[in-house]
Length: 164
Image (cartoon, rainbow, N blue to C red):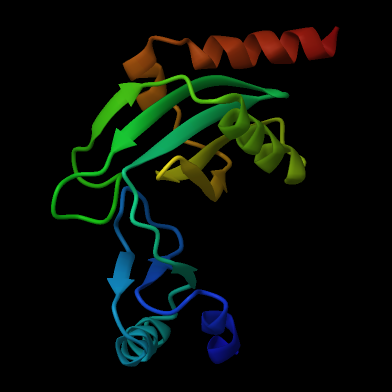
């Protein structure tokens, strides 16, 4: 029931995310309950699968690449001016090593799904972090290009060691 779900979200604005899209496409900020129902009606008509989430005004977001029980690479997206989405268009992305707490969240997210590899997205706001999603398979070439970490080689090495 939508009414029960939105009661837990601390009121508008809400974030509506269409599943299966990436880089901010299909992510909408909805500023009222009336607009939320209108947007959901439209999306239901297209048989879109949607998630409704609490709006968090981010300053940046993170993509952490987890292999086994550790983060092997990570990058940070800076939220652009005049947009609430941090990974949209041609974002400003830099290599970044995150706190142990953020890394532990990423590893736990992958492990909870019984995976050994995944890309974990985390929103960061006022020194707090919020897990948004765990992706498998995940697109790791952007992180690999930006940081220079050979993620593909690390995956092969991990599997080789595991086989032994």
